[in-house]
Image 1 (spheres, rainbow, N blue to C red):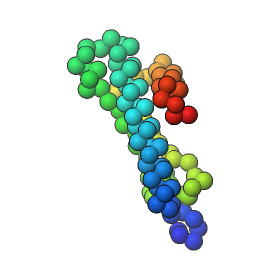
Image 2: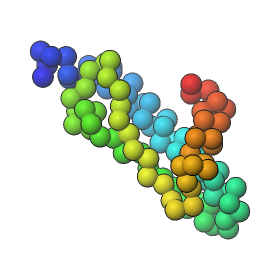
Image 3: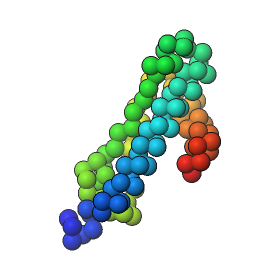
Length: 99
């Protein structure tokens, strides 16, 4: 796998981990914002969360610098892809300057 360029350098791996961590922060912020928009009780908003799971070549640890990161977002029942996912994370990204 090393000869094929499928083992990342330590710097590449650190960059990817940083990006994934930022995405996780965006996902959690998204869920809390949706919970607030749904006017859930404050204690429910405080414990609302979601996670980002990686899979594919990144999840297997065999990825090159030019490959993408396949990720799957798992969120709570009250946040829907149609109504919430493509709006709130995008706006969160713009505010956080994570473009």
